[in-house]
Figure 1 (cartoon, rainbow, N blue to C red):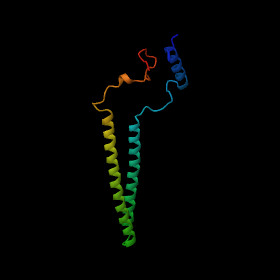
Figure 2 (figure 1 turned 135 degrees about the vertical axis):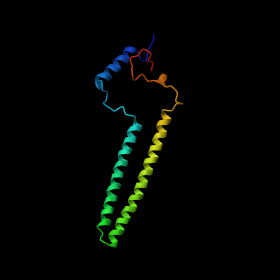
Figure 3 (figure 1 turned 60 degrees about the vertical axis):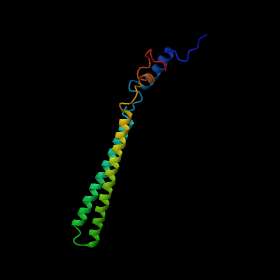
Figure 4 (figure 1 turned 90 degrees about the vertical axis):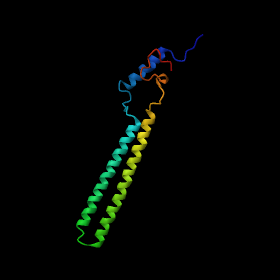
Length: 134
């Protein structure tokens, strides 16, 4: 008596049921690379922080111009400008570090030294293919 763990009819039935449940769009999840998604999120966050810096500098300049010689307002404006420049340096450093890390990560994952992994497929693209044995 021969027992088979997964025959082609069982595979066809399973993927037929999955196709019926998920439809042609599957679960509707995006096929975007997670690294690209993370880079987009970081880019948006750094853009928002950069906008906050711009508003802070404009506000500090407005305070300084309308201080009318009052030392307290001038010192407040100077402190805001100083803190804003320090914040900008931190933002630019964070952007540079992020860019470097993602650049290295993308190059290492798609580098020329990568071996061909087409033989280690899990048959997700075409599960009914006769050569699919997994």
